[in-house]
Image (cartoon, rainbow over all chains, first blue to last red; front, side, top):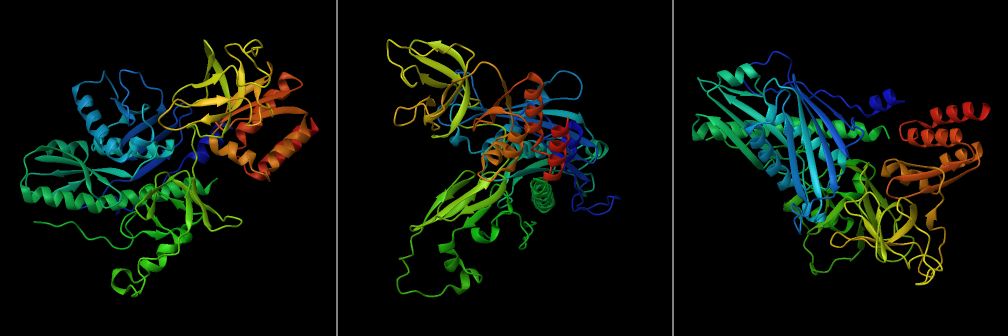
Length: 235
Length: 275
């Protein structure tokens, strides 16, 4: 029974990407997503992008400590656990970025004095980790039924030394790049919710990366739609 | 300077709002906007360029449409906030345009006024009981809210008991309050649930499916063994049969019903009826 439940809840789908050899230009790695795989959290999702894999669990709206409660909206907490070792400063800063993105999208005013907790566990890191965390968090929030005003996705761009743009870079490409930019975009009008960048780039290159990320997010949102439709078609 | 790539009609949720009527029973995603029937004429297939001129442009046929779970009003339109299938119920009579809601699969319960739920008493403080209903805070239940309870004649409720009651106050700003009597003062099946039996948790969607008027699962289960069963809208089911084994079998069947098709279910019932 447990096995069949997992199979029914598992939704794997390929993204609208080009074929495997990734040339310079805009192509994302293969995606896969599985929802409702954990029994304890109210919502859970596992998101794979190439070899990067993140597992997310959402608890909420649940009880909150009086010291942390906000009188007119929900308290959103994000916990990111790395694959090995204790969480450090890098995890704290990523948690803050993910929390700011989620707060912009989740309708916290509907559940004041409650807490919504997103727990992310890195299963494997092969580049574009923050984008994969954002995607997993979004799918887990949808699975938990937390009211949201839009969906969101994360896209990473890397600029190498001769200005070529690579989307969804691997660890090697990120290391050799001159700049790595991660954007979180919303689904309604592809607006920018969050951006974090590292490295050296010009103003024109920033706009170019943003435009490429907006185009790529279309693929991600289409993948979300397909996987959610498949999930609801089974019931 | 590069500009954002213009998107065509296949953009996911933004771009054009769709008519609610055409999206019925389809999966909708958070962020989508839906047009109510009265606005469809105004928006029209031509979009901004071809709106017909009207002499009384302000007056519109006012239909009162109720916005159910999963939808919010956003200006003139409905904004989808949860993922699920869009449903509509026509009103039998009257001028209201019916109810729209989104059928989503969820595990977490949010208290709603009028819902009948199963709670577990966690504390007794003075004149009220604190009851855990699975929401974000425990509900309060006054000791006078039982049938035939007075200040001298207190109900026999201990910490750890199961209570079946309904919410009289349940909104996002206040602590939820529940009672075990209806508006006439009668218990009507509510109150403390007996000591034996098994309480287990299922998803909210399964409870709604089991409580639907034409649900065959309950009828089939009733034919198997004699049983007592209580459904709480907060995802909790209490079941009691003659022996512990039968109770466990029933609990497993109900939990598994969510993922089984009708045929698989009939097979299992047939096999159980034989043994």
